Length: 123
Image (tube, rainbow, N blue to C red; front, top):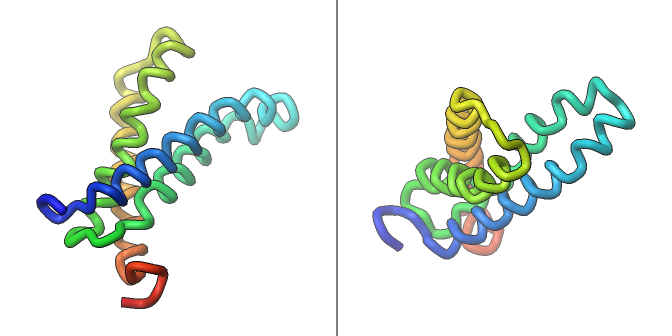
């Protein structure tokens, strides 16, 4: 553990969020074809779910809110190059807004998950 962050739990959370983001991006065209209203907000919903899953399990972190925020932002950083490749031009405001959502949702998820013990028991 360094500076209150459990690096193993952080790595697992980043991977978990990354996988959810990639699967959600692949499913978005299908959701848009089935229900256009859902397709418009599908990526936002996917991002919130991914950042929540990424930041929730904080492991042995001394600072679970920081752990959750870093983990969720890390999952977004890893998926960002795929976004640039797939979309071509990405607006800087969109990148900053999504990063802010990642930090906020990940921090909240870390706060919510802080009461969990090492193996799911109450602390």
